[in-house]
Image 1 (cartoon, rainbow, N blue to C red):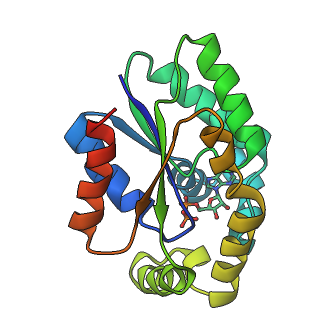
Image 2 (spheres, rainbow, N blue to C red):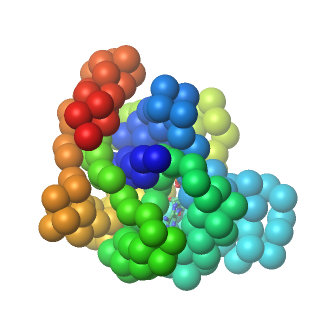
Length: 189
Ligand code: ADP
């Protein structure tokens, strides 16, 4: 029962790879971004409380996101998961460890998908044309998300590195090439 964190800047291709990995390794795929977008689309109280953050490219509050993951963990007991977009701050990582510990579980590995910034922006702009995601449409919001990633999220790698759970892969190349690199990491666990 593996718990894998797929990590990287916005637009690095986490979502695409996470879906394929979930199939290959028979894991659940949980994307906090997707959960948040679905709450917003259904106009729930939770969704309304997060809309303003997401549209500006800022992070949703830690407490809300941790609560979402806690609900997820309790409804998926006994199953392995791919975490896509979580944890995104050190506070989230610490809360996650505590939560897993209390359930007798652990993170097996964090895999960082390394992609150069200009490629990130190009990919997201392209995706925005097809997906209609509001936070993918403007270059300014995209740059802001990357900036926030650098300021608040990149350090989460150090957190898992200190636990010897961090691996970097080259996120450049075709989707198949990147997929095989990630599988190589998981197969060697
Ligand atoms: P991307 O990886 O392209 O940024 P996501 O779907 O993972 O796309 O996330 C979209 C948005 O949802 C983020 O910009 C952020 O505002 C919010 N979000 C997602 N996950 C988290 C999280 N763990 N903590 C705070 N905010 C989050």
